[in-house]
Image 1 (cartoon, rainbow, N blue to C red):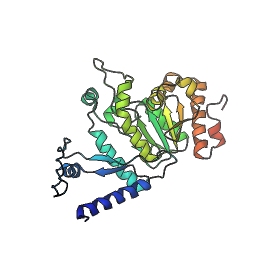
Image 2 (spheres, helix red, strand yellow):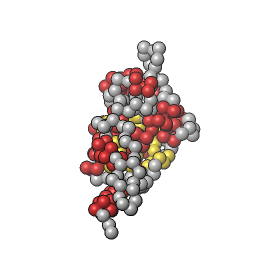
Image 3 (cartoon, helix red, strand yellow):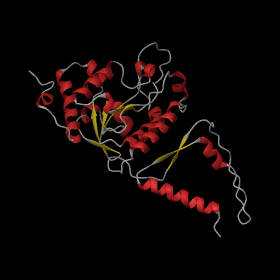
Image 4 (cartoon, helix red, strand yellow):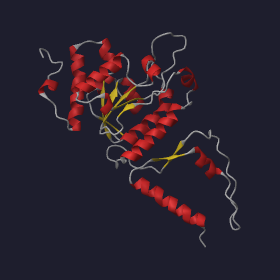
Length: 289
């Protein structure tokens, strides 16, 4: 004879499978709910249930309950706007209290989660926050960020209509230094990468632009130098990925030829997105233009 518990369990499974069929990969679950689920189930005469250890996570912190693997990337069924907003808000809440890297958590001023439109077809990925980003809690706000903003605007977008994030959500610590930044280590990138992967799976952009060699390494592993890779389409989680130079490199190298190479990469991105390109845009950074 089926109990009320059996019927409730069947209904829950059916609901979760329905979410999965629509492409939902994460559902927000309050910590209190998880604790309740971990409590010992009252013993039944037929099959006594063993006690389950209590939750160790803080009661005030929400978490994610991952669903079974589902398709991801540009070819997956997109999340509806409400589900996307909910999933990103829950992910952000997790990232803001992350303590996985003790040395980074101790040194940071702010977690730099990401900024922009989570419904955008275009996503930019950098390597890690610098001092300006750490102070403001927003990616790409220093000199390199200002240049990236101009590039985005020249493409016909704005910071508010694309999404910008980094491989690392915390600034790499620089003990003993009063200025400067450092490249994140491989272990740091591996530890933090799940947050970015979840952002990508929630947004499911049509194109990702990887800014610089470290961003490419964090996403794809060490394959080739950025000089060889830039301008060539790669694929990441079924999404076209365009590697290009980091804006900071353009600040150090004022060569018109280098600027043109980056712009040619952005023209390819616009073409892949099906955006109209004006003759003025095509002529940027050409000699005599």
